[in-house]
Figure 1 (cartoon, rainbow over the protein chains, first blue to last red):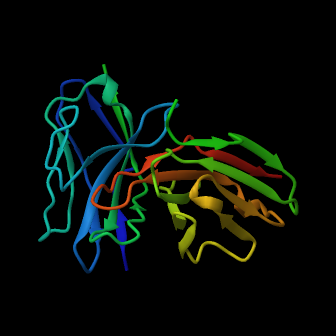
Figure 2: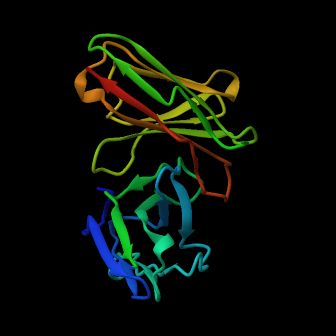
Length: 111
Length: 114
């Protein structure tokens, strides 16, 4: 079964501390992996996707197929990073591309 | 604002009533998705349109739910005989087809069934 697991509901760190939001997935093929973010009172938006291999707002995520993980990392957290973060996967190859989301992790960056 | 829009933003209804939500995608996008999000959960896929064709429906979409996308533009999601368990945030998203997988989400419609 296709599944995305985010084990932490809440992650609280101090400003300047490193951040790692965990994401593990279960999928038999080769999925596309994404991180979506929802800031307070804003809509859900794409943060980054593994195929782009880019850094957005200082965040990076590496797809580890052996461990079926796609953890989100940032070396120095900022207060404006406080938000709800969702890991998601979709089937690759131009199919439906429906997203399967994890339950989300609330990141709270303390001053 | 040229993003995805949804109407209404909030809907309170009594159990047993019918409700209809509307989604206007980004105009160039041919793919449209509906998701449902309940408290403490991530969004769950409901259904998908490519142009006007409804190509996939989740098992979550009971017989009381129906979605349309006439002419491949806006979409409506109707829930008949609402139940308290239907209370949730209903999200719409749209995207291009092809290699771009980014889905752009609307602000959602929050449904409360009393």
